[in-house]
Amino acid sequence: MATQSSTDRVRQALLAAGIEDRIVEFPDGTRTSADAATAVGCSVAQIAKSMVFRAGSQAVVVITSGANRVDAAKIAAVLGQPVKRADANFVRDATGFAIGGVSPVGFTSAPVLLFDQDLLTLGTVWAAAGSPSHVFPIAAEDLLRITEALIADVRVDD
Image 1 (cartoon, rainbow, N blue to C red):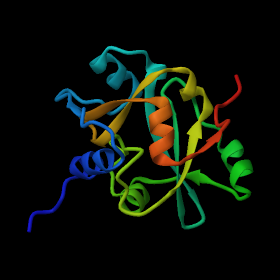
Image 2 (cartoon, rainbow, N blue to C red):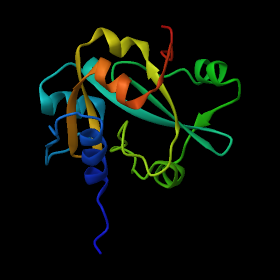
Image 3 (cartoon, rainbow, N blue to C red):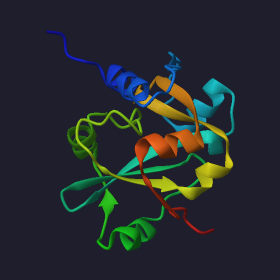
């Protein structure tokens, strides 16, 4: 039996949530928010990047605007415990995705999910679809609904 790809897991999660399969591949890559924005023709803010942190042994995925830097102290305050950025091995083991392709849906095990409140002002956002070259468009409100993430202020205050 063939192993299911990360992108297939994302596609199945989207379809199961009633979201049309609109995954797009960009062979030149969408690894960074800037790369993704250039590829799809949107602002960096409209890229919904999924950043993985560790709270003890638990994965915490913060779905945030590509224009924002994430404040680990704010995440820790929301969770009531310290967090740190996850390394590449932890990201893959905990989410089933490699860095650069972490999707907000289709995880191999359920992480804690936080949702950047700033995304809700942006209408359509684009998120990674399980690889560094696949993304999908989705209304921010729909992304919040299907992830069931906790809305939080996660942005570094400038």
